[in-house]
Amino acid sequence: MIDQDRLVNSFCELVKIDSPSDEEEEVAQYLIPKLQNLGFSVDRDDHGNVIATEVGDTPLLLSAHMDTVEPGRGISPSVKGDRIVSDGTTILGGDCKAGVAAILEGVESVFEDSKTHRPLQIVFTRGEEIGLVGASNLDWNMIKCTEAVVFDGNGPVNRITGSSPTYMRFDVDIVGRAAHAGVEPENGLSAIRIATDIINQLPHGRLDDETTFNVGLISGGSVRNAVPSNATFGGEFRSRNAETFDLLNMQLLATLQEARDKYKDAIISEELEVMFQMYNLDPQESIVQLATKVMSNMGMDPDIRPSGGGTDGNVFRLNGIANVVVGMSTNEMHTINEYVVIPDLVNTARFCQEVITFGY
Image (cartoon, rainbow, N blue to C red; front, side, top):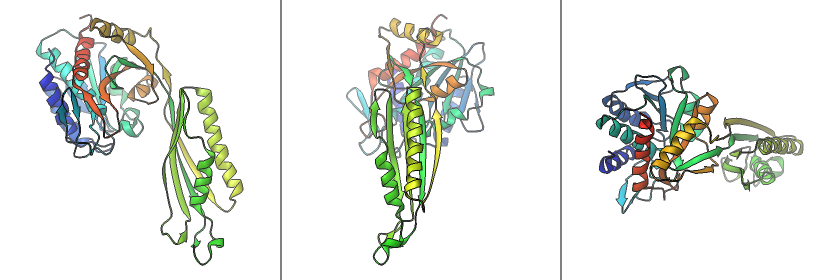
């Protein structure tokens, strides 16, 4: 039986451990003995992902990630009514520690009740928030599963990610020519001006129901009284439509080339990288059928809807692991207003419990 107090306490303990992306070691060291005490054999791959394995055939993979976004240091959680919130100066860290806590509680509940269950592997990844880095570097030779449940969705557990976009990150570097801003500005070539010119030619925001484009980083110059010789900016675009994605890629490259033609003395370079690939969920997949049946048995209506974000599930699919991404009770992710609804968190743990015992 799910122990609500234990679940809430476990979640609060987890979010108090600082684990911004690339700094997950302390939370990994917290999780390893917990998994070992549950009877798992626990290993780390070369990237530092935590992989817990139980003996048995056709194991089910349960997964969540260990890292959080900023501001995520010194989180101070508190219970207010049926919600868990931060003190308003940081995120809460429900993304994805609500998923981690739900997995731990669901599995522990099954084990302490001595319920027959499907063999398991549990994977807690690093660096999900900075481009699914941990999953992309996962040692697949250590993974014995062909199906997975990923606890990393927004909202209640019955909210299933039905589709996810392809995501491109880009960084642009501009080298102009420095000059004294008050004495000889005409001899300078402002890298900041070139950057703003390029950015103004690019699309911004939500372009359609499947597509977004954003420039989220910009820096340049060194002092107020010099024409800036350097500037950089970075952003992303994502779409669930392959043709639209390709057109945006072409538009970005064409805009950069136009700037090179206009500012012939400048050096403009770019770096683009696809961080994850789109997918559309097949409702007939066995793992989707399993998840929706369990939800229905719990009295919940499966709510399959598209997402603009990516999860480790995108990477799992590229590596032959069919999976379903479910909600984990977190709301307003990546903001200081983030909160976890306790009844939803309990349902997430219950779903974990039921999905690994279904049919056994």
